[in-house]
Image (cartoon, rainbow, N blue to C red; front, side, top):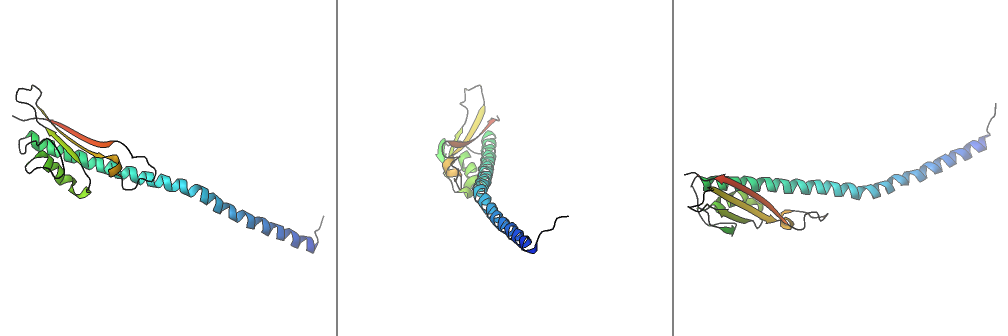
Length: 155
């Protein structure tokens, strides 16, 4: 059986402690490398969820305005921005979108009297650059977010 002297044991303990001390800095370096990627993914998820929620509200506003236009409760004023003219389909849509504080473009169309296709259309759009609260990653910088609803005009 081989024995190690007391002085060698103390020397080996010192090397083990030194090796453990050098390793503890590796986790800080790994965190510094991984944290920006994780934060980028987290902010992208938040940003995408916000845009998806806004689009869902725009679709609901367009559908409600098209329904009211189809049954004859309101009239179409053409292309406008919020707030729309009183007693118009655009005004109905603006009531749904008033709390967003964005510059929505609204367009409502009614069918012509001789048109065989009796559809009313409501379109809402907003620039994507305005629709994102934090555009850290630059994903939503160009283009428009658009919601469209088409319904049959009731006679």
